[in-house]
Amino acid sequence: MRIISGTWRGHGLRVPPGARATTDRVREAIFSILEEAEGRSVLDLYAGSGSLGLEALSRGARSACFVDLSRHALAAIRDNLRGKEAGAVGLVKADALDFLRREKRSYDWIFCDPPYNRVDYPALLEALKRSETLGPLSLLILESDRYHPFEIPSGLVLESRRQFGDTIIHFLHRAETAPPEEPQVA
Image (cartoon, rainbow, N blue to C red; front, top):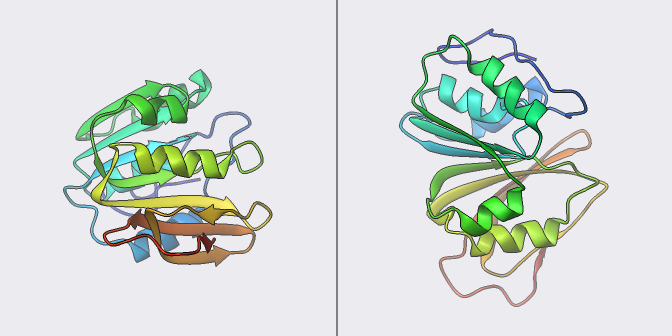
């Protein structure tokens, strides 16, 4: 595992025990789809190694907040940040749904890479939809796999969906108009 591009290109990443990190290939694809990271605020939910938020910081994001319930994950992120010049960085030990309920700040990009087989995607999407973290101009980048399909609730719009082997990346944002009649299948 390494940082792919930006000022920290090539730097190795420590992955905490038991974490399933987003592969270099998938991260590279995500960042080739996204616009410039320069000046963006980033939330990395279920952060694990912090690879998505760190990649954004390496590419010029102005701030990143890493949220994970595991102290091992937060220790790995601290190690991965050591010696690197970064903008504003926050590390929060919390359950993602609890964090979403209480956080009042919105972010430009929200990376969400939950443990596929242990997350309730409908509950997660509802929490994101109700949270102030997902602002009117925010983009949610949600990772899942093909074995755990879910519906996109009204109020959220699936902008794009990309599949890489078993991994699926969903790009979503808040609906600007009336919600669709039928939920979209992701």
